[in-house]
Structure formats: C-alpha cells, structure tokens
Length: 72
Image (cartoon, rainbow, N blue to C red; front, top):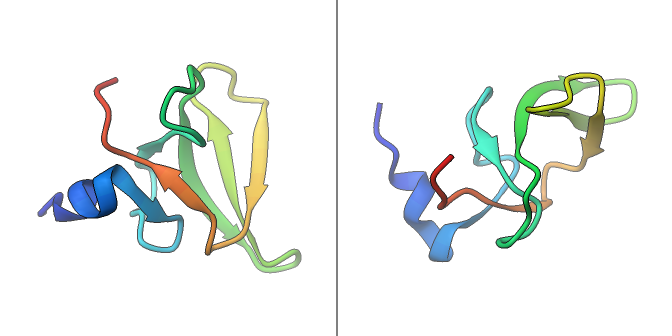
C-alpha cells in the first residue's frame, strides 16, 4: 500500500483522504495523536479516538484538515 497521501500539501490532508486506523494530529505541533475509526451515519461525522486515552473520542467532519506527516 502506497503512503503517498502522507506527503501531500506539506502533511495536511482532509479526513476523507486518510485511510481508516491511521494516525493523525489536529495541529502540526500537537502532542495528542488520534486514529480515524469509523463513519457515524447518524451524525454524519468520523469517530476518531485519542490513541493514548481510548475513551476520549472526537467526532469530525470529512472535510476537516488533519496533519499526518510526523513520526510517532
């Protein structure tokens, strides 16, 4: 599987472009790392989990920009 999506736009992509179960940050300098989980059809948003605190979830729209060009 190619990881070309990681290097687009200096590491910024939309959540729609990010494959499931991949790591991302909300901001470039953020300490928290999230994973894209599944699409919640009821609220039309992606469920994203804090990798270090599994019970802490975010619900983000598909067009939300996230940062992926980092080493974890």
